[in-house]
Image (cartoon, rainbow, N blue to C red; front, side):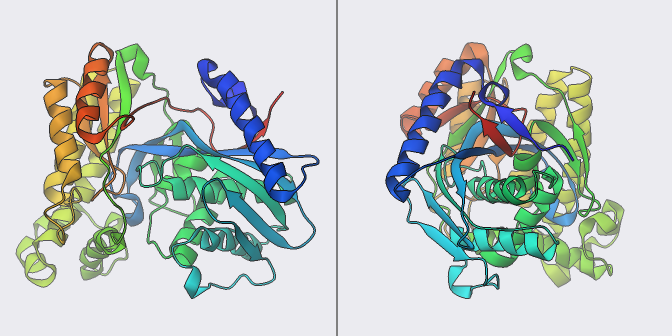
Length: 416
């Protein structure tokens, strides 16, 4: 396939290009200061992502609608011949792995080093070439933001290996699949494939994960400015620490329902199977598992409705599907706060402030995995200033991020 190589103008809004030039220049200086020299640097970028519909469906082969955003991780990179990948990320300790040892390291679980090792290991397992490099990275994809900083990091590493050692020939879909493997097996988080796919492929995309080895990806043209709305992500300042078990319970409970019918994923059965056996399923797996399974089927239908609405320029129906998704996540998926810590419900507060500020206009919903982190809101442009002010009164300056959808996923970058 043709390598994905982009200019700054391809990636960033026109108003941001000059600032991005300075950002890449400062990253190059930081690379030289940290590693002692810089000869022929190469540049790479991988974006954060926003999920617009399809909350917790990907891990059961469901449907999602997502987009890459203008916040990204960038890397200044030089290949090396020491068979090591060494990455220094701004504000974090250096990670270095030896490519002669690509086994899972238990002590590395939940660390960036595990993601690097996992991506390299899967590249090798798939028969792709790997080799050493050193990199300095800087990111404006906030950790815990629901924009999926871990997926962007994985995609970044995969994109670097693709270009340095495989002529840029590894497809964005394959890089996403490799990245998910790294997160599942090496990092230890049982995530689905949506985060990595949206970051790697880029733009607005509807994805059907019925066959995860060959997902169906449909680019969907959309321009929220045309509809007079801004896409906002609100950082509710929740702590994602110690929430892995909460996240893991969702795919576990959904799959337990599927297994009752002799299947691996909910996508292999129908909602009617659930409804005809509700009482038996409640007795065996509990009410929450049943509700989460029902959410899965309804959410798949909502993705189709939402995509159809955008294709038809029916923004009112689009907003209706977004609201329904948020309502279902709250009532049935139940990922707005952790049951183990009911005293802290920052997402509930954020949703309440957003609804108060929107005055029955726009839409808002939980964003990403849930339990802490962020909400998403579609805000009428006329109300954006007041919306930001109300949000930041509660969660602090800079907690409301107005995003732009980026048309390109993981890419090598040329600066001229």
